[in-house]
Image (tube, rainbow, N blue to C red; front, side):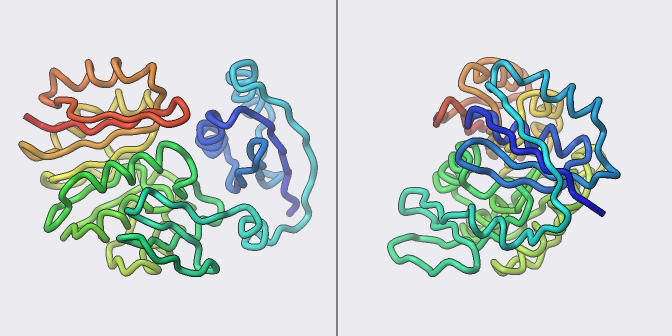
Length: 275
């Protein structure tokens, strides 16, 4: 079966949003490039109407242009290896693929073979979540990673000493890839499949991590607040700096207090504490 290829040029801050939107309408493979993203879907799975709707929604704001083509056969590993460089988050963590050499001078090292999942640390949201994790005591804590993607934040929690890490994602490809990355980094936990309402995590957690998008965060905020223990932490990202007030105002009545925030490339990340 042939794959359809869409080379999408767009502003950098829209790359992860477009990947998320296209994955919801049947696209199963992505490459982030210097100019935007390359998106792939089986010809039999392609929904032109849904695709055009997604592109129209972001075309003007993201300055989108598209080249379409057909790719009969793809060596995915070879393709993403060409486009994946290691990431350095301060001296906290060095994120690399299995084919990269290690690098001294970092407290931790994460091995992520992203394949076609997203959440490698390259995007500003993931980068900031990792940095915020480094500011929170994970030792012996129970941690939940919502919308885990490649599993990178769950891996970070494990390396920081969390005693129990749970993770899940709505995409079965992310779950498969995430479990592979867990194995590479010594996690025995398995990633679940579904939304937070479908997975229904049990008990409460010292730390909840959610790097998704503004609308989902607002919709699920009350669930996160219920899952966070008193004096526990909720780490959020996946939204713009202009959205910070909307998120914090929504969280405040739920007993969640903003204690730290940062921004990178107009993307924001927050640490909230349950008081």
